[in-house]
Image (tube, rainbow, N blue to C red; front, side, top):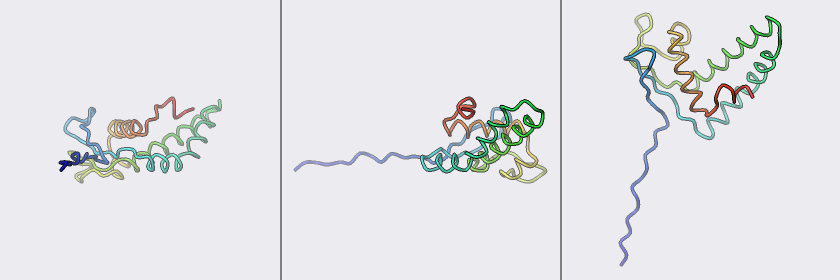
Length: 130
């Protein structure tokens, strides 16, 4: 009789917890990118990304402002999609949430978290522009 033992199951977490570099003592949890998640997010952002690229190619001040607004909308959506939780931060005496972070939180933390989410997407800034 053959002794069959199945391999131990692998454990996978759909999110990653990171310690903030810009605000020591603060940690945040972001989603890991899945195949379906990538497709859905890219589908949502496709039009904004195309418009941002077109505006960035323009030479007028209006084009530059439009490109900056569209880039901001892309970053905002990435944060809304990917940020699961924030620990160790209160904003105006209340626990930080994604909405509070976007509306009133420290921009350097917002930038750090968005860069982590973008890293999960597997797209560098240069790749996103192409």
